Amino acid sequence: MKILFVSNSGTGRGLAAAAMMREKLVKSGKSGQAEIDAASCRDTGDIYYDYRIRLKAMNLPFGSSHRFTRKDYDAYDYIYGMDEAVVDGIREILGGQDSGQKIRNLNIEDPWVVGDIDETISEISQALNQVLDETGLTR
Image 1 (cartoon, helix red, strand yellow):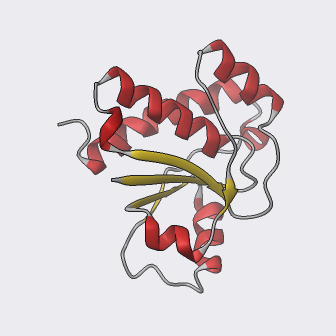
Image 2 (tube, rainbow, N blue to C red):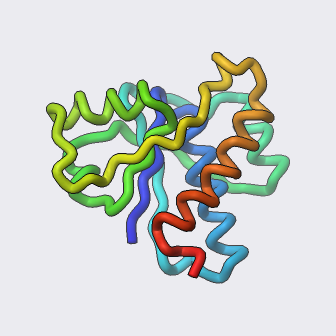
């Protein structure tokens, strides 16, 4: 199974969700059951400083994301957009298509909007429980 987390710029929420999901799978003994990655709807950069600090404090390794393409849609079983704007961006890249019904919205507010990155990290953690249930990885 392949799961992709997509954010706007690939410098925060998507990378954090991917790192936290990998950790959840390791802790549950299911790390070999899913491939997890992160992408963005536009150009990517280095992980945002506050996310880097939070993930390092949690001892979670993180990498970098790539720009979302049609090939990602074809390659991944589940594609999770961080919020509605991201889901719209994914659909725009795909020309409005979601024939496989793979795209899902996690409804995680951007920390720039919320003003609290710790709240965003908490929302990501809660949303990943939903992902585990939807993908059947809790069984």
